Structures are given as C-alpha cells and as structure tokens.
Length: 197
Image 1 (cartoon, rainbow, N blue to C red):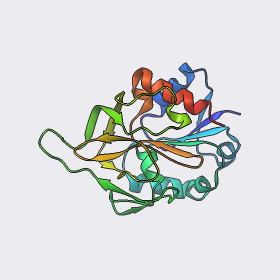
Image 2 (cartoon, helix red, strand yellow):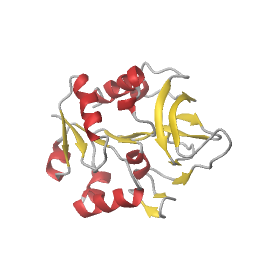
Image 3 (tube, rainbow, N blue to C red):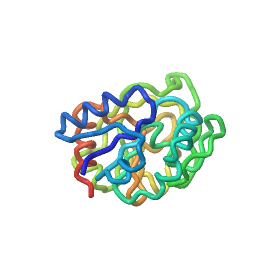
Image 4 (tube, rainbow, N blue to C red):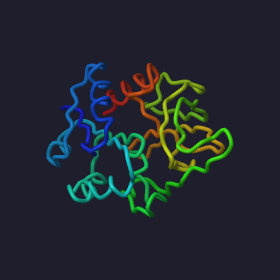
C-alpha cells in the first residue's frame, strides 16, 4: 500500500514527491479514483486559487470521493484550506470535511500579504502528526488566506492574529505551511504522517 499525492496541478508536486522519497516512501502522483481509494495514505497538496482547485476536483469526481475516505489524508497549504466549508477567495464552496471558513489575511506594516517565509508554531496539542515537534519550531509558509483557530486546530501561527497552522478531524489532517520545504522539522512531520494508520 503506497502513499498517493493527488494531482492538483500545483508546482509543488515534484518537491513533495522527492521529500517523501527521501524518507523511503513510494509516492505516486495521480487523480485516478481507484488508486486514491486503494492507497494507504493520501496527500492533497495545493498551489493557486481555491476556485480553480475546487473546479479541478469537481471535474475529476474527487470532490465527492475525498469526504468518504477512511485512510489518513493530509492537506497541505491550499489543500488544507480546501478541507474547510468555504473560502473567501472567490467565495468558493469547498469540501466541508472540516468546519469553518477560510478568510483573507489582512496586510499591515511589517506583515505583508502573502505571508511568505519562516514562522514559528505555538499552542501545540498532542497528536501523532506532531510527535517530536516542539513549540517554537520554524516552518515555511506561503499563503494569502488562512483558517481561524477553532476546535480542530492542533497548532497555530501568529501573523498579526493567531491562525491555524495544523488542523485535524478524524482521519483528516492539514498543514498551512509546506512541510516539504521546511527542512528537518518538515521531514519529521512527513515521517510522522507516513507512520499513521
């Protein structure tokens, strides 16, 4: 049973695949529903706009499939945002797997939008995905929209306000940051995901 990366059309697919291969995991990029259903674990990456990403998922039939999955699923960046009910980006209806909206970040002096670069996690809650990850560790973010903190938040990041950096409900996890671009801390998180059953 392998790890499947859903082909969401983003430019980060190859770097994510390489990051998993460095951890000894075979990872296939596909949008085939049968391969996704049969996979041991699934990653939903995302780069670009919520409206375009949801249109691709609906066109391929994956918007209906994803909420039914029972194996571990990890949404990354836009992929995490798509797990929620709706996005302010284009007033887009998303997958509604996790409760709540995705909101636009507000720019301020010293806090440009997009939020781009390294930032520290805080407010960590115990979860297998976060094993070995300490408060204050740095991860790499690139995003203009964010999820407010809620009962599904496992870790947050401060960008003028606290927003969700890691989320979970049941077998669905999400990270607002890019673990494949987050050096050793990101590799630890991806390794933890590969051990989830």
